[in-house]
Structures are given as C-alpha cells and as structure tokens.
Length: 419
Image (cartoon, rainbow, N blue to C red; front, side):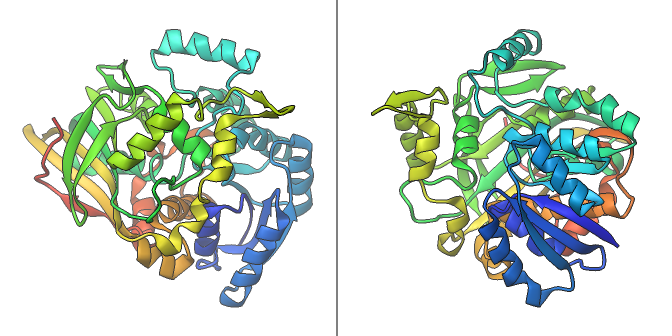
C-alpha cells in the first residue's frame, strides 16, 4: 500500500520501525536510512524474518539537503518519517519540499550550534517578543506552512508522546469531555530505574539542554518564565507512586496556547530523582552542559557532545531498566454548565517494552506514536496541505491506534489536582 523512508536508526527509530513492520498491510515497503548504514542493516536483518514488510537500507547524512534529495528521488517514498535529531528537521523538510513528499517528525527544531550569529539574532528577537528563552520552538517549522500548502503536502510536527500524544489528549478532551477548558497540566513521570548513577533516557545532548533551561508556562495567553527547576510538586502517580516533579518548558505548550487560546493556564511537569538533579547541577556548574566549543590540546570540542560520548547510550538501557512510566494530562473546566476535572494518561512498563521490541519505555512511548501518526497520514485520515501539530487533527482514530498498538489510555474523572 505504501513506501516509507525512515531517517534515523536510534532507540526511538528502532521502536517505530518494529511497529511499522507489525502493520505490513499499510507499511508494505520501508527504507531505513542513517549516517551509519551498518546499524540499519543489522535492524533490517533482525526484522526481515518477522514481517511481510519489504525492508531496504541506505546511508545518508541528514545535514546534507542534496544527499537527502538524492535518496528520496531514488526511493520515491509516500512519506518521510524524520526520527533523527531535531537539528535536522529543516534540512529534511527542505528535501521533502524539493521532492514533493509528505513529512513527519517527533520533536521540533532546535539548532546544534547555539552560538551561530545568524540563528542567535533571530533567537534573541524571539525571546524579547515571545517571552521565553528555550532554544527550541515551533517558529522555524511553522514558517514552512505556506510552502507545504502551495506544494499540496502535509507536514506533521512532534508526533511522539510529549509532544504528540499529550496534544491528542487535549484535542480529545476538548471534543468529548468539556465545553470549556480552563487549565491543562501535562505530567510526565518516569518511575524506571536503570541502575546507573547517572544516565539520560533519550539523547543526552537534547535531554540535558531541555532540563537545564529556564522553566516556563502559559497563563492568560502570555509566557511566564522561571529559573530552572524552581517549581517543584509531588504527585501520586497510578502504578508508580509518589514522585517529585518539576515545572519545565516544553514545546507542546506553545502549540496548545496557539490552538486553544481560551485555556487560562498550561503547564508541563516532569519527574526527577535527587541523584539525577545533583549530577546535572554539578555538570552544569563545571561547564559540561555548554554548547560553546572549547580548544583542548589543539582540538576543538563541544563540552556537552563530549559528555554525551561518556554517558551510557540510551538505546543500551532497555535490558537494565525496571519500573513504569505514567504520562498524561489533567484538565479543569466546565461541561453542561458544571465544573469538571478529567485526567487521561498512559502507563507503560519498561520490561514489557523490552520483551516486545528490545527497548525501554522512553523510546517505546515515542516510537509507537510516530508509527501511529504515520498510519494516520498513509491511510488518509490526517492529510491536509500545510504544517500542523497533532492537536489540529481528529484525535479519535489516533488514540484508537495507540490503544491497539501498545499505549492504551486510562481515565480518571476525579483526579487529584496540581496546585
């Protein structure tokens, strides 16, 4: 039925590819491409005996638009799934436009070099105008909206769990549960234990940038920015227990604020253990989270990239990690003139994920929504020219697919609220 090009072969991409191969009637042909072709070959060889999907592989540098264009023209896919790094979103979007192919990714664009003068000037202008200082935002990709409209192509942004499923939960709540929504709290809890003193559950460079940045939330249509990790709450998560969580900036707040402008407050919280925070603060204090290159023994290195090389590969955490994740959204608002609260969430078991696809739950909860989003696009349920985030499409078939393929929803109509 369809040919799909997957760019990336890390932990999340591996999960998404496993899941695509479980739906061979839609994903009839799949090409896995990354800078390291041997990783693609190994995964293809592993999956080939288990699926009817025809799998091929390719080598590509996703920073190089010309290489991407050559690969896309050679393979002629119906969809490009960008499951590489968010640094490469724009080059892959450019290549899709040049080749007339639909596009999707799992996280919004951010630059690899935050000291680039051209990017820095645009960034500082946005900080003043918008009121938040995170390095990642949707403006770079939203700027492609007219190009994709004119080309008759669809670009789906941020179709992981958060962002992604959390936005579908918001669209579902607005469609089925509320007449008006007053507040949205997005809670991301990882109750897993991998046994290391310090490791990150997804790309260390992206993860540590995100966590060490100032927190921010949206209130009455305006950004409120706070020092990093300065707002802490405790919450009792279903099947995980009580955990400390901290308010962070997160990309879906920006798109939800745009698409649900009447919501009075939107916040994002993520859980962290004390050991993780102590390690992170120490690394930040000594400059290891810096993205500015330094000269060491005649070689230029980027401290956070060097740190990434020292830390365990997130893809290696699967067999070590035990426990569960719990990610979802708590809403307050009104229905039929009466106050209402509602909580929709998913609980995912690290060891069950590893038994199924050889991955821990962090990669699983991003890779499964990526496949389900691609499924929506390939079956014509989520297609309209332009650039869109998940909440701008009908959430019902997407959530049904998540229920079917490994991330079933749970609901609580009288949840404890976050103060």
